Image (cartoon, rainbow, N blue to C red; front, side, top):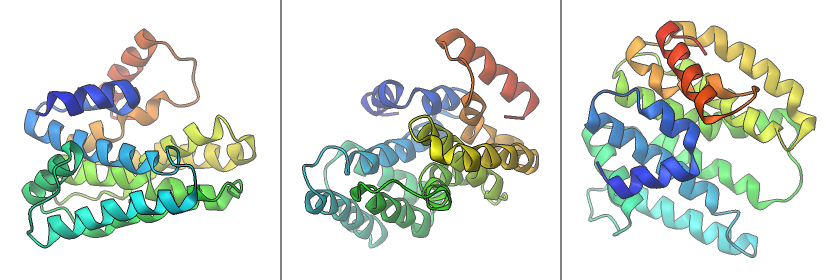
Length: 220
């Protein structure tokens, strides 16, 4: 495992990092961390640039990285790019969800607040796609639809913390995810365990206990 990448996710994405601790296979855990690092890099594109054009350039950089990975060419020397390319090769991950994660971030280059249904689609293609890919790594061949639903609910709940207008659609997504996860393969549960942390009083100890309880029951 790339310890630097793991440390990065521990700092910037503690919910999903904690969930990944329940992945016993260290190789698969590293590959799941690579997915989360990719999602983090895409999320940064609209936030660290001064205008939309620069954000588009950053997102295009990652699309070109996917070209390299899927065409069997040397991948640019960036820790996340290298780790993601390795995960793609090891698990034969499809390109479509990785592309969708890029496409979803273009909406964030527009400062106009998202409408509720628009926010739901955004969540399905960001946190939802990341959870779907993580489930593909952890439980190959299983139905990853429940993982996408749970990952979307988590992403939407986080967005709703600052945008109350999407609170209702977020609550519905969370309820739907709880039902969907019952059909998720047991091995894939660490891909969605972090969804158990939404909408509650937070502290490091509470988070760990909630995750333990969620994993033990297989419910979020």
